[in-house]
Image 1 (tube, rainbow, N blue to C red):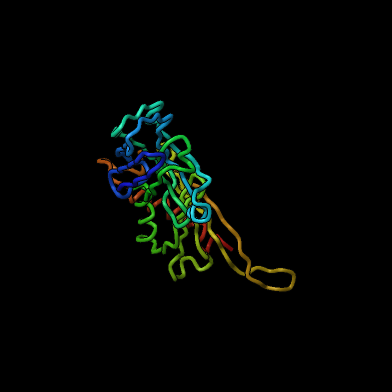
Image 2: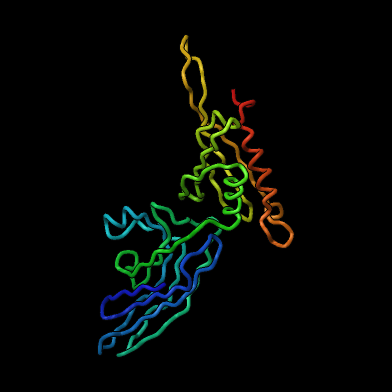
Length: 252
């Protein structure tokens, strides 16, 4: 992927290797600058920033109240001669709990001079779930037949809404929201079950709704099998244990 930006007689060009990435992977490429005039200039600062932005804010304002994640000072006080052109290699290591790309926003690369947050070039990145989280989610949908409704960023977590199958196993569950992340090499999951059932209010019987929550932390030694493959048996056991809170015999 590439993006080109023109500012104050300079052409800034950002090149990125790849089209999409997963949490925990490396993003790398080149940042180049070219003097497109016949004069000499001095550039105070050339920088590259990785930041999270919301699509709605960008659309309305043209830029965003960026949440900066990483930054690289490529060069400063750079004297640029006539026809000067130079490229620099760069790389960012995505954290295992970095924001994914969802319909609300995602990570962007911002590049340019001093005021890069407002006047620089911009390139949006497509970030997907960490492979372990993706395997955990696939176990949920294939082994337990839950239907995924959405994925979105929620602070330092990824929130995933899942709807139970049409069966007698979970008659009182409306849905479950899973908040997942890989943090300090542990797979952390918070389940929030939205439950409904019949309850009494005075002399009346009516439908009541409430949340039930449970948390799990799975070590790297458990969520990987020997050879480095995801441990789906571990995922299945943990999901099944969490679902016990929503099965009829323990609800009402």
